[in-house]
Image (cartoon, rainbow, N blue to C red; front, side, top):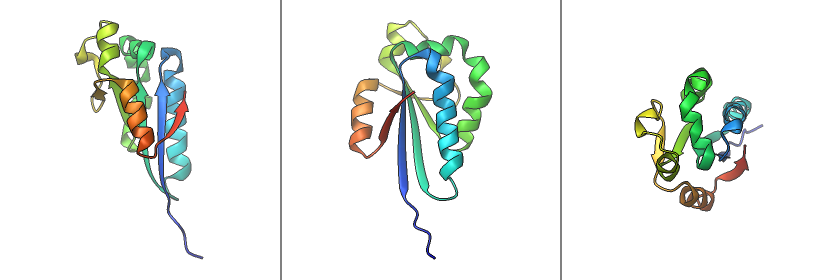
Length: 118
């Protein structure tokens, strides 16, 4: 029997800091469930109040690093950073930024990413 690999694209939106850990775990669990069966791309976007997670990021660092090591990507909204007065220096290693999170959400969905809100 031939195995058919699909290209699965997941986009997890985290606008609420209380859902940050859940979003990271959802992404990790998704990757672990499909990594040997399918190609994948996983993006997490943090915007609005969710960006305040950067003020207490240390407790999430091990889970964040694990997700990055599995190939996940984590994006932080620059508009939210500015609105909540969070310096760009708080972006963790391998974290990325986008100018406007809402625009990225729409663009990525148009590229075939499946939207899930954490």
